[in-house]
Every structure is written in C-alpha cells, then in structure tokens.
Image (cartoon, rainbow, N blue to C red; front, side, top):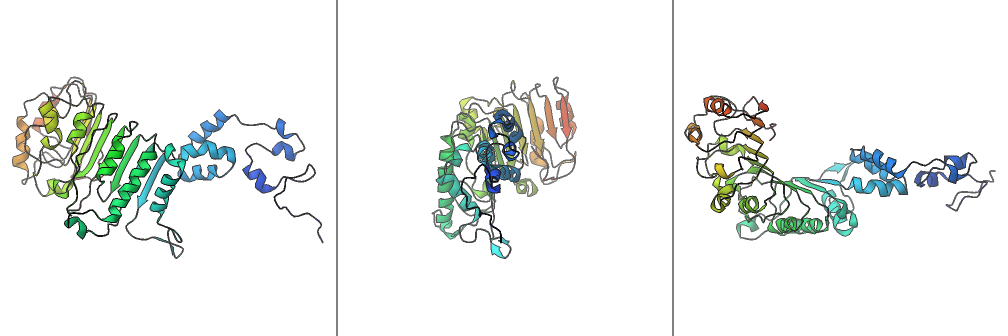
Length: 384
C-alpha cells in the first residue's frame, strides 16, 4: 500500500515536489526549483519582452488560452484580449452537442453584454462590433407608433456598454435592425471615438428615424445599405459638424440602381453643408450604387484641396461597363454636364466605369499616382 500523502493543495515542503497545478499557474519560472536550484536564481523573461510576444498574437483563441496560463500572463493579456470585441447575434437558436447555446443561462450575445456591463472589462475595449441577425418580437408595435420592448432593451443595454467603454475608438453596428437615439447619444458623448460604421436595416416596417448628433473627434464614417424606403437615419448634421472627418464612404442599397429608383439626391447628405457654405476636408470619399439627379450636393461633398483619394462604384453611369443601362441612362447622362472642379489633386482613384467622359476627366489630373479599375457587374465583393 502506498504511503504517499495525497495533495490537498497545501504549501509544498522543501522535500516534496511542487504540485502540477501550482506550476501551471505560477507567474515565475520554477524549472530551477525543480532541479534543486534556488527559485530566485531562475531565469525570468523581462515584462517588456513578454508584452512584445503577446502583441504578436492575433487569434482570439490563442489570447484566451494564454490568459488562462498564469496570473502574470492573465494581467498582461487581458487588455489585448478585450481590445477588439466582436459580438455575433443569431436569429435562431444554435445547438452544440444536442443542447442550445447558453444552456442554463441566456444567449451568448446577452451573456457577453452582461459581462461588459457588470464587470470592468468594458474599460479595455477600443474596437467594438455587433453584427448578425436580431430577432425582433412585436413588430406590430412599430405600426402602432411604439418601439418593441426587446429592441428597446437591446439599445439600452448597448448604451450602458458604450458608457463604460472609456477608450472606445471604433464602433460598428451591422445588425439587421436599426440603432435607436440612445445609442447615438452615447457615442456622441465618447470623445475618443474616431471611426463609426452603420449598416442600416432593409426592413420597410415603420420605425423611428433619428437625426444623428455630431461627434467631435470622428475621422471615419461609413454608411452601408442606405435605402430611403427603409427609414434610415439622417447623417447630414453629423457630416456638417464633425469637422475632423477625413474618410467618408456612402454605400447605397443595390436595389435602388437595380430598380432604377432615383428616390434621393446627394443633397440629403450635403444639403446642410451647402447652406453653411462648408466643404468637408476629406482625404477619401467613396460612393457606391448611387442613382439620382444631378442636383446641388456633389460640389459640397469634399474640399478639392484636401481630397486625395476617391472611389466610385456603380455610380454616374451604370454598373461596370461603358454602355449605360437603358433604365438609368437618362439620369446618368445628367452627370456628364458637371461644371465644377473635380479636383486635380487626386492621387488615387478606384472605379468600375470607363466611358468617354471618364477619360476626358482623367486628362485634367496632374497628380494621379494610382488608378484601379474593377471589372464585372454588380460585384458584391467590391470594397470601398
């Protein structure tokens, strides 16, 4: 019969072996102690070297495993682990080994938001993204002029998270439902926010439209899937009063050009700028899937002395070929008469339309360094 004393977690004596669970969670090297050498003389990695190694880890799973390795690595890796948070919402319940995700609790999305609200980890977040499908309950309440409770609670919970993200620099909303006013108010209060991406819903169910408030230090704004028939929010005030804005990308719903529906103009976005006599000092400007009449607005979309890069996909002349579509030819031909200065300071241009007007415009550019032509029609993979 073995007389070895069982390991109950007590402190090891100088004669005993260091328990395995202690060695796995020790913040210092114990290899020397196992070999009979004093633990104080064992070699230790400098903290700055450990920090450099951790910075090279870009996989969330690797970061999570390193965090569980030791107390020291926990404190070193935790800020990196929570630096970028991406939450995926699923419209249906997913099952793992026959059990629904979140068995015994809430959905993974709600549990993640609960952790950000109730703990101090939200203060470490610099980039936050929420995307996927949100199962709205009580859509008939929208038609009655009231926001359903589950949509309202989602926005309140996200607002609580944003209020605790003192280092937030980038925010992306890519859910299939719209953000409400409370989210924009929380983002406007974050003076650290420099990048904002909003993907609007494609649902035509009536819902509140919000005048997005200005954000003082915003430098990059990206609007996706903008459809005037789906109750989008008004970003004209945001463009006007966010004076540090350098990168503006407007992506419209492909349905508008596919159905030849000129239901808006660029004045929707730059009308306030035109009235104020202001041109945003952008460095990059992008349009995709735009269709509309040549009214006031385009000349106030960017300042000609600062804009260095421009992207035009499926805009001002059809979808990626030299022959305009018969359904949009009358609207697209209106843009051939633009008389304002198209800025000879562009260094980079991206587009998928080649026609006579485009080549004549290229002749006026003296500083153009890069020209990208994307082939194909209605390519959803083309990026701005």
